[in-house]
Image 1 (tube, rainbow, N blue to C red):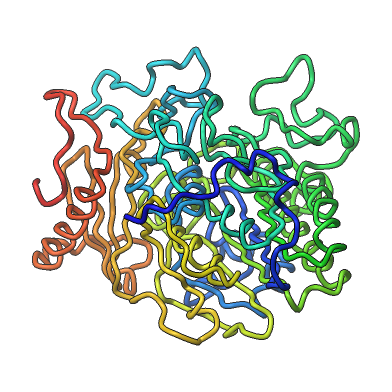
Image 2 (image 1 turned 180 degrees about the vertical axis):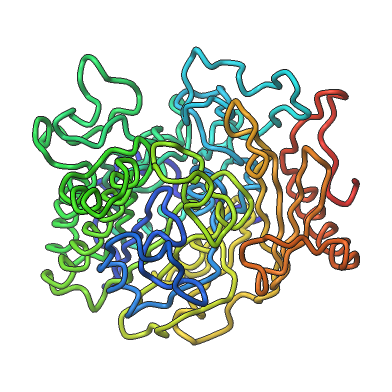
Length: 525
């Protein structure tokens, strides 16, 4: 483990240390979408265009794809916070022990609440209920921390702080969701951001509508009301549009001072509540979609419009040729929530399941990277994962020789974008771990799963059942045909690989209700 600390909490004086320090480096825009599925756009991430690719109008995602390296085998975690904290720390979620989304309040577990966020009346619902085989593990429920010694956190140096120290003006806009309220990690300034707009402990917006003040009304306020947007209260400005406008305002300073910037634009869309963006919803209703489907489609198109505005803004300011654009999502599309309309558990087909699951629909995500003048345009099928973003972004920024208090798991994928240098081994193991019960009812293809992918092979460990499944993703992207019985040697090898990683990282394992002991590792069953 590397031991050199960051510059400390100088980030608490955000603007004082955000002045230019280095010659112009490439600007970086990280455009992160929430709960957005692999087939929720017209961009072809797979070997073909699937019917679900054609549901929504996404011309700007298509526009970006035509100049980008498009990653067809990109992965995130099954739910939001683990992905976001892996991006910030360069660590796998099983390694940080942040394996579920953090709650609004510190020291309160968040799994199996049934509502997607923690409320006091749900306390205890994450514990075993009647008939449950497993109960929640001991995990880092408070998220990441920039300082050591905070209970239930992973102490880590933030990728953003290194960018700031290298002279970048760092801007956070939208959803943060790295840590619980009452801990240092909840504050974006403590991670190296010079500007923070609307980033709190909230994992979802209270409301998308400016007419509802984004939840900041006497009748509707709770911790998930979106902050810093008073200018738009009482207007018809959708949340996605308001955040986009605020991002442009924040970039005025670095652009006018010719300072490189890092913009982390993390849309709250397309997370629940699934409320229509009325700029786009009616055409989907007219096309025959039910209200839930039309509302979700409008949220998607709103995100696409935001991306288009960003690309246009960069061109208008004359900086497009020196700005790297990364487009990614934090987990697979939600396939379990009735608010989206349509048929449950089908929205991510041909991928199996969705958000919360270690099957492909929950973890395979869109990823595009555009590096002007250096991009190897086209498809890249080398498997990559969210913790790779930490070293990749620092590589793009030219930050070298840094040391971290945490052990990094990610590898730079910049060579895959530029075609220069050696990228990650296509056969390296990628680990996914969701040792939790997501909702207060059984979701057998979501709850208590762990998995590892090595090359074309993927092993899924169904922890509650003590079952190992094996899939060849090249031949069976939908994970319909379990071939474990025909390939016992591969099962054994992958079970050993997954077990070694989980053991070395001291990954949280759910507790067997009957014995009170942690569930066995996959090579122990």
